[in-house]
Image 1 (cartoon, rainbow, N blue to C red):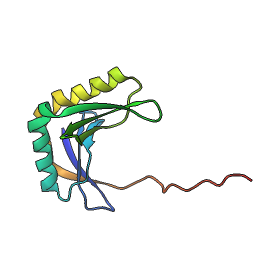
Image 2 (spheres, rainbow, N blue to C red; image 1 turned 60 degrees about the vertical axis):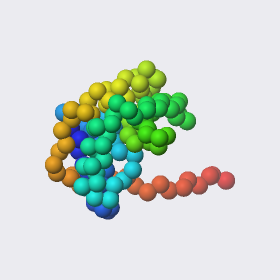
Image 3 (cartoon, helix red, strand yellow; image 1 turned 180 degrees about the vertical axis):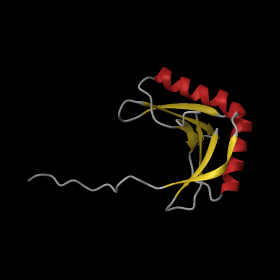
Image 4 (cartoon, rainbow, N blue to C red; image 1 turned 90 degrees about the horizontal axis):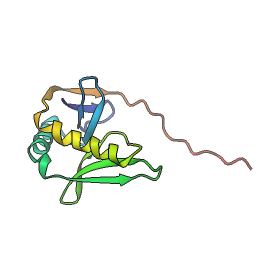
Length: 125
């Protein structure tokens, strides 16, 4: 199911495809201004998912991430990363297969950010 969500400290709306157990497959690559625009984005992805180009990238930590692109611009990003390229490709393929038939949750969920700000470490001299 596609879920629309926002963070309590921001008005922007994001979407993600989640499994029945709540684990995320993929998400939008950009924040969208309203829930109506987010729904339109989901509809556009569902309609054109077969034409989107998969891109697999090796991260600096030697793990794999996947994206679906249109005109070389990322449109969908896989949630999380994979330890092997073949698993990354499989996760991307699963999204392509599941997205066209996935329903859209009519509500917009609001989450509170829980991450603490990053603080620079001092070197011990």
